[in-house]
Amino acid sequence: MRTSYRALCGALLFLLWADVFAQAPVRVEQVAARTIVQQVNVTGTVTSPRRAVLSTAVAGLVANIVVDEGYRVEAGDALLTLDAELAELAMQRSRAEVLQGETAVADARRRLADAEKVGAERAIARTEIESLRAEVVSDEAALAASRAALREQEAIVARHTLKAPFAGVISSRNTELGEWVTPGNGLLELVETENLRFDFRVAQEYFGALTPDTPVEIALDAARDGRLRGRIDTIVPVKDPGARTFLVRVLADGVSEGLPITPGMSVRGSLKLDTGRRGIAVPRDAILRFPDGRITVWVVDDGDGRPVVREQAIDTGFEFDGLVEVTAGLAEGNLVVTRGNETLQDGQAVTILSGSL
Image (tube, rainbow, N blue to C red; front, side, top):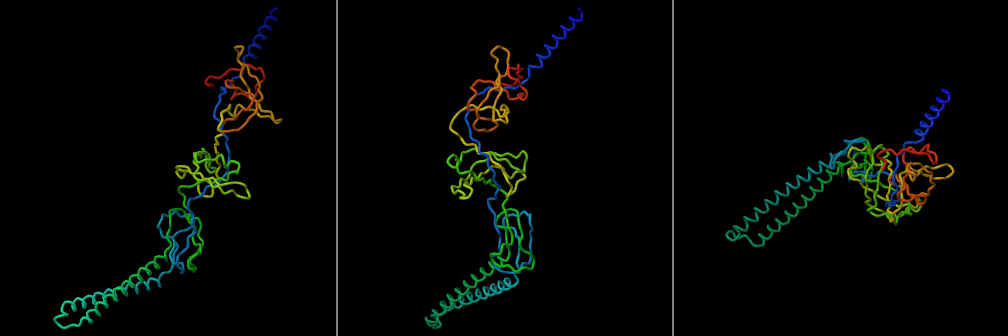
């Protein structure tokens, strides 16, 4: 009798333990209608707004190279100089010619003033005064020509120094000391590293759906947590005839602040296209996909006062922002399991964790 009593107690305890164990703890979310967005994932490249291959404006011998690859420079910084000895000598000669011209003009003006002042008293002929006036005009013209020649020679000397047209980083150097260079030779390459842009190639089927207001999320391959909100700056309506794509250029505020990013790096983007309709979408974690193609969710049924789960087959549409559109199989108000759905059985009792809804 005692043995039977113990067996009965053990069976009751086992049933109680099994019932508690069967009530799997789950997190759920109520199905609701929302705006459906088509998310288009694209890959692209970080590009610079300005990139220049720099060359000198005059021919000459490379006398000094101030920078090397990787140097950061500011606009106006000297990068390279050519041997300017002959040009500087010519400039000095032009300065002497200007000084000579200024002296000649001053003397001609003095003699003209004296002649006009005492001409009547000393019987200086009117033709002689006019001749002096013409000499003044001629000397002034010669002086103007000398000054123009001096400015030209100063410009030639200045062009023996190659300066940075904008701030950036020297990405390549293609010359060395002692080389003879001519205009058009690419000596240095300068790349701007501020205000970087993101260029994406997008399939032509989305051309009509994109607008400047289309939201864009940018993921940087070089930064694990580097996600930025971008805005479309340019949509280039010229398709690549080979790839059937078009260019979408995206900008992002503060892109250069503390991010390990440089022109040429790869980048991923998500374009959020407005479909113009509303529908049902559930968290991606609620979706179960099977090798045979079935797609299901676990729906909580608490009609009898005790929540149990039922497996429900669904059809899906677009995926966006961690959500999956459900085109068939669910209705607004359904409760779907989002956590703890890996080992559930059909009809199994569950315990809904607090904070799920």
